[in-house]
Amino acid sequence: MKTVTQLKGSKPYDPETCSFMIQCAVHRDGTNSPFTILSEISLCNLHTTIAEKLKLFPDCIILWYWLDSDKQKDGATSIQTSDELDLFKA
Image 1 (cartoon, one colour):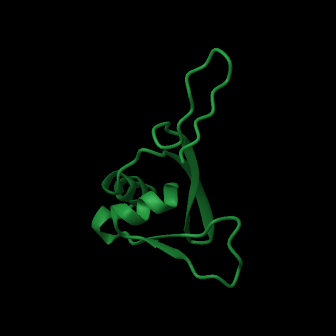
Image 2 (cartoon, rainbow, N blue to C red):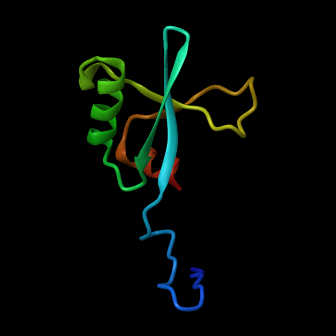
Image 3 (cartoon, rainbow, N blue to C red):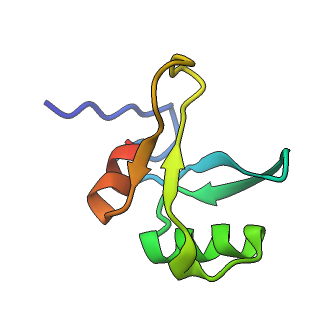
């Protein structure tokens, strides 16, 4: 069952179609470089964005992420396919 929330006088909010900003950071040489991405970003554009931050070629990038809620002992989660990116954005 799909739930759609609507405030009075506004368009319905549908999490499957509404874009949002995702706070991110790349870590290199002991420092974090924060940036934001739009939830609609493609895997190719995400590779390019991160490669530019790291000053590397996009094909050299392997994407992994940790969420703030992940336990310290847990390993990172991979983003190597569009399906994995969709899971990250969900």
